[in-house]
Amino acid sequence: MIIIVTIVLGFFVYIAYRLSFLTAGGAIASWLVGLFVWVSFQIEGIVLLCLFFITSSLLSKFKKKKKMKLKTIEDESKGREAGQVFANGGVAFIASAGHLMVPHPFWIGLLVASLAEATADTWASEIGVLSRRKPFHLLRLRQVESGISGAVSIPGSIAALTGAFVMGVAGTEFLFDHWWPLSILFTTAGFFGNIVDTFLGGSVQVAYRCPICKIETETTIHCNHPTKRIKGYEWLTNNVVNFLSSLAAGVLGGVAVLWM
Image 1 (tube, helix red, strand yellow):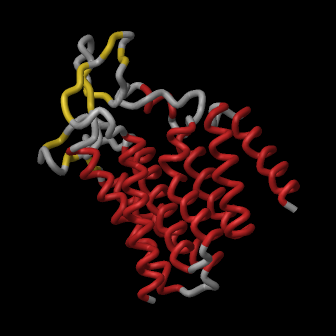
Image 2 (spheres, rainbow, N blue to C red):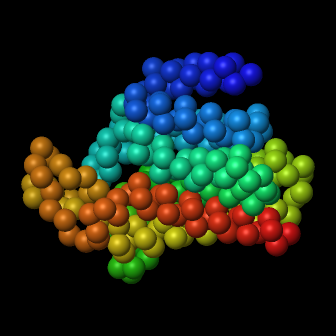
């Protein structure tokens, strides 16, 4: 069975690679995370993971040219890299490994809530950046350019809540036998993780400024020139913040399962 699972997952990540949803490294990372999730949580777990990946990938392609004109985020035209895959799916990997070693409902809650946060964050980023109004920075208490970490918009917040809800409901349906009160807790945990992501992104996450166009960005190279760090810690990149936020949401979800 494990051989069949390995081949099937390999086929799907190859298709994602060919469609430029993933880079080569991202494809390998996705295959590894998917394999652990499938072995640990069976078909229900992989369906949940695919729901996050497919919706997020499609949204990333939605009005891509308009998004890239903002020039504040890394170019993902070749797909998500391994670091980005583990940033959003690393906690799912940990939950799968933990459940394999010591089977417990906590790990299932960790999986569902972490994916709820990853979905909320991705949907918020992909939809919020298209808002007609400039987003409001929660720490600077003023409007800033779209794409800057720590800022929120109404469309982005709605998208975040919707993403957390979709994943929370799906996780409850697939892995907790329709126990609907948990879907509310998973939605809350996912949205809470998104808020954590926003505050970390606006405070301690590293940010740079381009010496040419003067724009604030997350990249070390912009306009073909090295950028200058203006805030945060160099090691605390967007990927690290995404991982920490999904971990916070996952732990909250796992505790919620224990409490229920």
